[in-house]
Image (cartoon, rainbow, N blue to C red; front, side, top):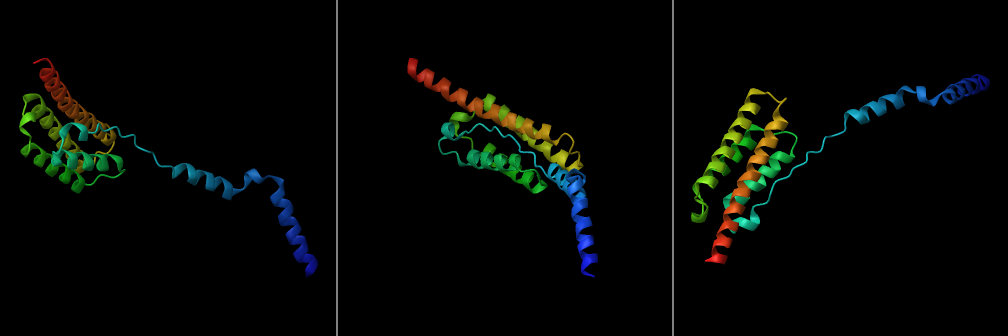
Length: 160
């Protein structure tokens, strides 16, 4: 009996030493590691905090936009919250930002958020990354308009 157990152990050890690359467990483990890798999103949102003083609605919208764009899964509730915050932003413009250029940028941003909502509703997720990037770029252009207005005001004050 002892000899039989020793023989089985010896055969098992000898079989394992032949070619460790043929081990099924090792191959399966490598496949799983490759499949489970998560794609990290690169988010580049221009911060508006330095330009808007204490306009709380734009800061809230920006924070929520960063959260939505950084997650892998967006839900209709996320988009509804973005729509609500954008509506609050539209209704609370500081007087100095009530210009056609900035108001137009907000309308474009609103359109992109509505398009994103529709894409999620329709379930067409193939182009979702493109739509998220578009919302990000639209927001960055909006903040750029605010920055340009402020720089224009500073230049006017400087020379007049």
